[in-house]
Length: 259
Image 1 (tube, rainbow, N blue to C red):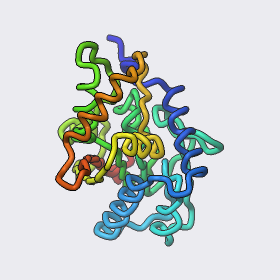
Image 2 (image 1 turned 180 degrees about the horizontal axis):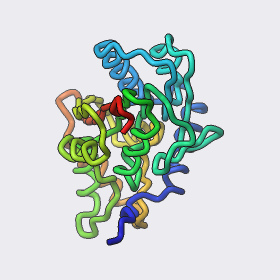
Image 3 (image 1 turned 180 degrees about the vertical axis):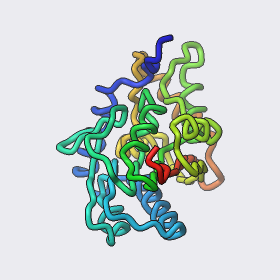
Image 4 (image 1 turned 135 degrees about the vertical axis):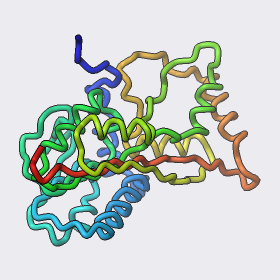
């Protein structure tokens, strides 16, 4: 039986989208980063609730450094990583370091081809009893954009947006990966837009561009204009469209026995 995971995402495109995002975060005067900020705030609340204290932590994907500098202030040993740059890490392979009593992954897992394998590697990188919290956009995200993109060229529909994980699939994945005390939940982040172009810019600035492996033709000018119109047809009375980002959270531990 072939155990090779399906090739859904292009690693080269994934890295390019991430690199462009980091460049935009540096270049833009006021770049969008509300998704990451929401994740950091949420993790802070969760850690305070469970009263988890760590001595050695790994933070993956926090390009603002807020989690390390403002939340994990009592943790003496913090390792920072990303999928690009000087401290690049491959979430689909065993981690080069282990023994962490806390690991946070902000974003990134939604575009991993072998998500079950990545969750196993996260568990194995923990010390016995260690905690993982991983967050990323999940099922239910961007319904207004999806409707607009589909309406842009209904005669030639193409895979222009990523498949997304829901809470049920997340729970199954955690069980399959052997996490102890698995918890899966989702919350909605609502953002209001005056134009489709502003939404697209926000997505690019937060690394949510397309990284699918399949090649699709770009939208024609006519198609994109139709998408703009359909998007704005969903506006409220004040002329703004309310878009939804459903943030999925996977959390769990490694057993005290280290299995």
